[in-house]
Image (cartoon, rainbow, N blue to C red):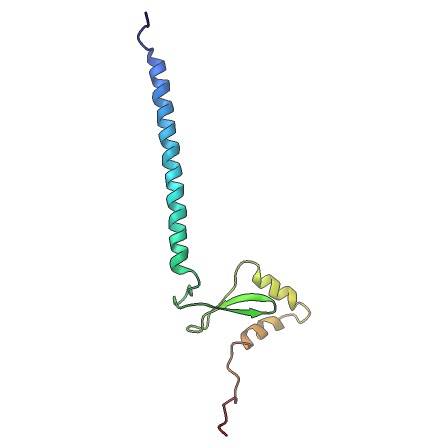
Length: 114
């Protein structure tokens, strides 16, 4: 004849059930974070962090840089600054001037009508 379950046995099963529910809650929270991150990425992808306008990709010294033509901001992804600097390390400091120089309008270049 089976006896009544022991009190510590009941505690064990309650604890196991609580751990299962806690793991499920953590998995749901992680999924929600991933979904929110993806939603933010969709909303902000290739938009200027300064003014919110669309960023345009330009290639400069073999590196794709992102440029906002509204606020004139230039954005680099991780490691791109080092690639540009390594490419131009022979002319110390000149690479900064050359980056800025490619975005300056050329003076005195007006189209002439024939």
